[in-house]
Image (tube, rainbow, N blue to C red; front, top):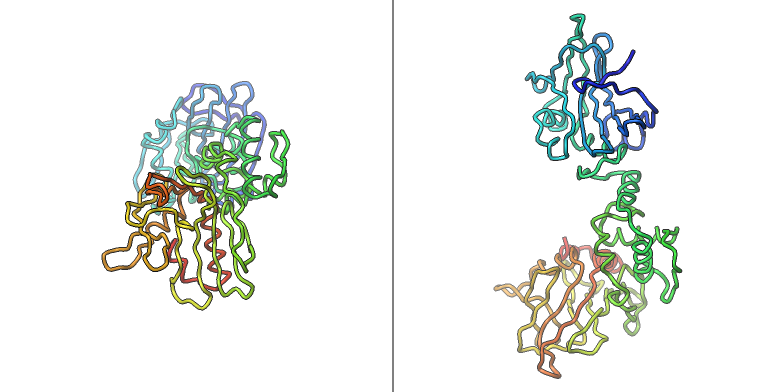
Length: 413
């Protein structure tokens, strides 16, 4: 039996079958489907398989990505169809196939809203078709979702501009491939990641191909930045990696006297003394203006402490004038700072009741970089210090675990 593209006026043959189903993707709630590709028309065709059928030869919902236009379409997979309706939440809607849609057109189509009905808790979606001979058949969809359809079109057909969420390793790999990075871009990323996570002084060569080691570094970077894509590049993070230069990567942070380095996450190191009575994290300044280099930012806790008690030192040794305006900019957002009279530590500006808010430390967790601004004590002139926040969150969690101080996690959560 021939299969026809209803409403398009043209036949779409079965062509070459690519994928019947992908078990790993089914676990991520993609709808059951089959995929074919017509090389002559450069059309990628996805047939959504129903969860139940009645009648003889019931039609299926089908989506097509025209890879030359590019454009999207949806219709029915079947033959001899006189008319069709969709039944959602007890309401009947005439089914009208569409061609030549942009992503925006697809989202604006009234039928598109019905494809997400089951996912929104409205129950099953029924496709009922009257054939040319007067007979009826029906297909029932229980697990249909707009997100699942968009992911299928993106993954199987390479459709662009759908903003589909990537949830599986296969989708992460496809999303990285769609970035179409140049050899120079990949080499730059390799060098930056080697500076962040590799052995100091390692020469990565001049290849633009990611190695097994690079993949391990990518996975560590994603863990530090809380990106979900494992050892594949997270597209939203790539612009920041391409902007980062070797000069912006923090120098290795030396261990404080009597302490050893337990771990390194990005530009942040985790330290502890021999009996782990004190644990700390620290990073060196990446850039200085109006000051010499060699400043660090650090946080520390005592194993015998309680709750959220933690020492904060946003720069040590403190080069800034205590009685002048002092602040920090984190990804464009400013926070007031002060110099604690007794210890000389630079800390967040306290609230009216004398307590400290966690707004600044939460910003450190989600930020890319922090810049302290104030007047240099030595010169009385404006001065700036820049710190990288790559790895801060992961290092902070390690510090809490090393000294068994889970209560301090409230500072960044």
